[in-house]
Length: 368
Figure 1 (cartoon, one colour):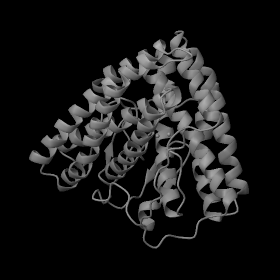
Figure 2 (cartoon, rainbow, N blue to C red):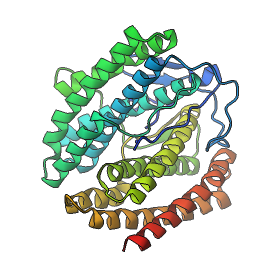
Figure 3 (tube, rainbow, N blue to C red):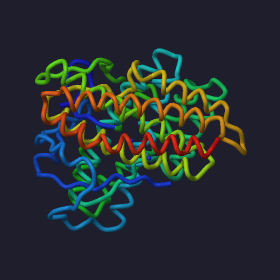
């Protein structure tokens, strides 16, 4: 399980042109989420880590009506925005209390994201992995605030707008969706998003969250492997989301969209495995990955109205360094891990990491 509060394992996750997550099916036990205003705890069956990418769907249920599908997808984008804003504040903010609020909201929104993924997979609905529409506009405002050194103030304003929109959409789903299962699901996550809105508005409080991963079943080596992979995926989604929002060349936009989809899917698989092993993984980008994320965020200040060339070079350089390190780490896991689940995950993602690395090198070469 993965936790929304320090010291308590709870549900995990994190999460976006529209980048889609593949709809997934699972056993009923793997789809069940018990939720209240403080925590969401999955009763998840152990994850099959051999199924990391794509594949045919078996026994796919009938999809809900179109209006329910689009409403659920819109709510997913709204939650993706909350994740993005809170990750940005946690990384680039300077006010300690505002950052603590962001970390608590980030933990909740990551858990909501995972709950949405699992639920949508069970009803054959594909959710966006990125922020779209007006959500993208608000995300761009956060990036613009970084350029003028106004991150904390921007977050305090934007997170209220984002949470209010999310609460409204989830409330509408809980009362107006035609599909009874969607109404029940939305009603289950509604107290969590309402509590986050209250905290953002200053009328409520959230418990602080832990910054150190821990597990009730995994040994130190396996926990390090799992948390390292999860941190990589969380960071890659975040940086690719920034790039998708700001870059000019379509080739780099397509590359970042591809990374969002691949790393989002990886984070879901790792989150499910963490839930099944009683493991808590922080939702925020950890200190070990912060230098890479800081470099990309700082590069947004070089963006000009007609050119993102300098930003693109920084982003691609960081992708080359990051994926080089990830490929080395994966080779080590394959060669030394005694955990068959984590070793299989490493075997599955190694070709994808290599593809991301070669693509970044090619893009850097052609854009010079």
